[in-house]
Length: 469
Ligand SMILES: NC(=O)c1ccc[n+]([C@@H]2O[C@H](COP(=O)([O-])OP(=O)(O)OC[C@H]3O[C@@H](n4cnc5c(N)ncnc54)[C@H](O)[C@@H]3O)[C@@H](O)[C@H]2O)c1
Image 1 (tube, rainbow, N blue to C red):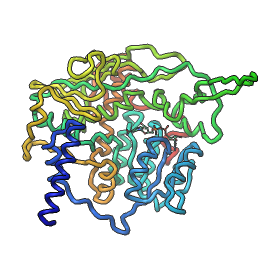
Image 2: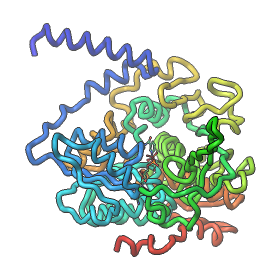
Image 3: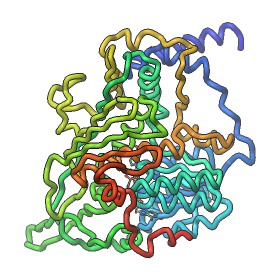
Image 4: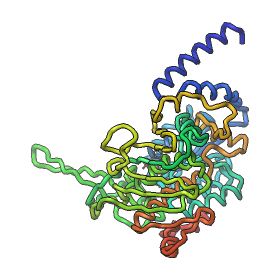
């Protein structure tokens, strides 16, 4: 590069850096250090275009698949709702080539030309899809929350490692410089000794009571339910009256397609939905990303509506780690941890790290600190803790598919991050304080026997592990 074009590029970079810095609060020194370390992207060779298949063609799965197609060819899509699969096939066609459509992921996994699975199903299907994928030699980009219960995570970790597969969990905050910066500041002592973390999550909805509504023709409801107990297809009915008195009914499902996440049988509510993201960052900042808390004390703080959503809407969970750091996970409207950032009436959505010498708060879109110099003073280049750097979550996954190295949110990290949320949900549902051994991944103490039963969930047949045997 000649001197002139170097200077133009440098000027452009400084301008772009200043804009990013002003918009997000990430200081320019951190962006500059990142750029200095950036490796040149690896060129794609002719054999370097993996075949991609999407399982679960809803909003997020399609978003992920759109990001994945930059690195390969989408050759198959699968959904238990035929209409979702059909429209995804149209979305991901390339010229005249339309991806093959499946409604049973087991058939799709038989294909040798599928190298990568993007899993965008609801939470209760992630594990069976991912297990079969790695057993049939595919690499996986799986949406968070990685699992429905802790036992699923243990099985998945084992299978990924035994089959030497790459699995990236869709916790994309790990590939966002703000979150990495916050964790590096904390891990390098910028706020002194870390003492407490406050994880603010959205409040869950309290819909209901709902009524049975007709199942759409395109949807295989029994397959959708999968391992979850049998339940009616429920939702809301809106009756419209025309001027001539004729009535039409509009049905809005409240059990499937997006709203599954508010039902305990499919998910864990906001505790596992947003909790998967923010607990992951708390674990990263605390240096416990391959471990977990030792004490958990959770409470649901409001009644749910009978016949409505079943995952707690208002909750507060206090946890303690073996290193003495404590953590509060609370929904925004319940939170009383309002002393640190922003609106005095809510706990803000994000993660606050509180240390002996100040605090750092990070959320999507901004990073703040108790004193400007905590952010503005560069960390030394040779700082003791430099965290895994990724600035493109899907790109990092495909880099690892090529290099066979672990991605930024590998299977153990994803399992441990969501275990924090599962532990919170268990304590809330048992309404008891619990003790946990992160090494053995078992509860200990007085109520251990009862608590250990919650590590596993009963799977409705035929959708148990034999379904993918
Ligand atoms: N990373 C993020 O920021 C982020 C954001 C949104 C959602 N998500 C996660 O993505 C996942 C999907 O969420 P969504 O909002 O797209 O839900 P969605 O309801 O829009 O889509 C889920 C799709 O999976 C299909 N499906 C259900 N069971 C299936 C099966 N056995 N095989 C194939 N398809 C099946 C459904 O019919 C539906 O089309 C969830 O786990 C959610 O937590 C992540």
